[in-house]
Length: 576
Image 1 (cartoon, rainbow, N blue to C red):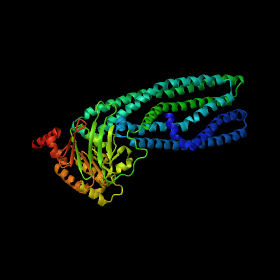
Image 2: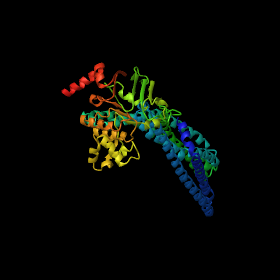
Image 3: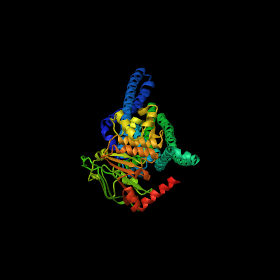
Image 4: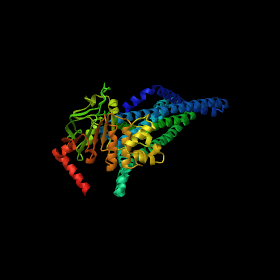
């Protein structure tokens, strides 16, 4: 998977990669030339006392050094820009894929895991790319070139290279074979920490309300300790690499001087050649060390690439039609034709055999006990889920055949879980209509019964809204979300338990105000409170995923036992 991702997202940067490879080649050749020039200075200049020769070759060494520095700096510049662009493109691809997911795919991966994959995992692969451009390209050139130049200086000591490099390679392989499983476990532990931390931050009010801080602290501490233990274990193996490399390098230096001194004493080797050979063998081992650093990143990057690829290769269960319908009549009649929904692998369907029609100019209410599939039913209309049996039609067309933008432009949706974005009141309202005027926003707030508290805010429409709307109450969030949906003036309104946080009087005023702008629209309301839906044109009663009652409030009181029980229980609660 790592190779596939690198090939896919580095292909647009072939020119930059060619420049990096060319510059690294120049810089490495220059680095390999310097020891040979230094050997000539020692053998032909210092020993013979030829100052002019020393100055001439010293000038060449300075020029070669400048070329090396310039080539290396430029290569690192282009390599860093390419690596950052690669990370940007992978994050963008992940983001586009995730926002195409239906609720089923998001639930499968989990929000914490998706966040980790789009941040930490991408960063690991990006770091691998950066290291490749700055180190890995240089390493093989320096290794091969170093061997060639060392043999050019003295063949008699070449057996040291043959002995030392395999020993170092075996040590590195042994360490890496223990690191790879640790990296895989570490990413999963990181997901767990992110999940728990996200739950605790989001649910901090619940934690405090139930005085569960010690329990949550212990839960986070346990996950954090697991991550720490795995990280320490991996870190121990990582920490062993550099001492091993340095040990081999120091042993090689001693060996070169030990055996080389005998060859110098016998006249088989010059002092300058011994110095150059020592430098070359260090360069060879340095190239191995650079490759080692690369291989330290490779296991973790490979694991991260697998996690990234898992997301990129997952298709949404809600697939847009290849040639979707883009023009529909302006009626927005919604029809459920024997519709059903079952989660993959579930023993029982959430919905089964649902058939009814919601018409323009009418309000259709959906009620039932908790867990009967009310929210799932509403989510089938805008294709947050797709029906697994039967059909859901808008204006006589199966929603799976309608272009997603066309479908969503007809819908004003207020979900069960209200979410406001960080920004201002105005910026949240403009999610419904980007070019909305202040007059339009105030009109929507009037209908949603939100004008009073928005006017009371310090800056009115420009007042700050925290992420998730945590700086306003639950009822205020619901009213702002309703106003946001009203901005679009859609043909189809979906209210999924969107009045639950409102008091009875505000609920009544809001529903009365809605009638003035929904005369020609189709309105579908999911509610738990009978008072909210008793004036609806038709009420759908769900029980165990199926319809057990369909009619007006008065009709259902006489013909539908489950509905009568709901009414009686709420009336009894009000009397008590």
